[in-house]
Image 1 (cartoon, rainbow, N blue to C red):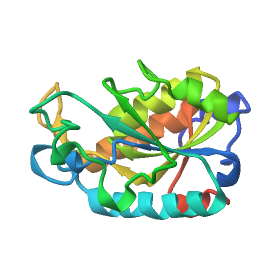
Image 2: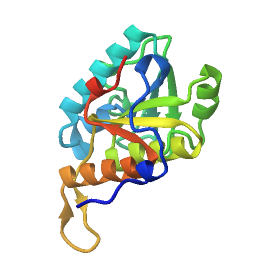
Image 3: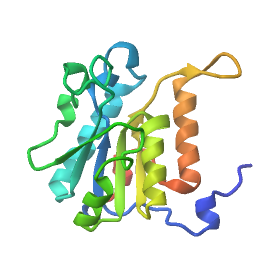
Image 4: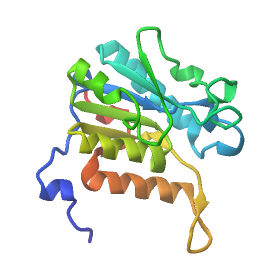
Length: 198
């Protein structure tokens, strides 16, 4: 039998705020993860979930912020090359802010915090890639900055990685464990975008 979450013990919210009262942050929805060495397991269904969530946010008048990772020329995150561009299925509109980051947390070294304060929102809906790195880091940073993040599980994905004690950690296991760790205290985690009310 599992223990209660820290969110439960600390009486933190367990239900996501309405999308219309939040900001949607799409993190690193780049071609990086659709092809080549960094292609993720389940990336296309996750992108489709992001696209549905994005359409709902636009219809609700929700502020949308796109995060794009830049690791420099020649990397899989080269924002000057096709590989580093935001996927066409969730491409930003001209009125949607795009923030470029160089570290896993979307808050570190960017103006994301200032932009959210300008918008006057404290509830955030997060989706994008990868579950165990930039979603993880951004959700934790959001919590530490006093925001209330919700992570849409079906709108994120990851890859298998080496287990430092031997063998590999399968992508599905890493995805599940990362979401469970976030839901223990840092974020509300919902299975899919239908669980986020408009």
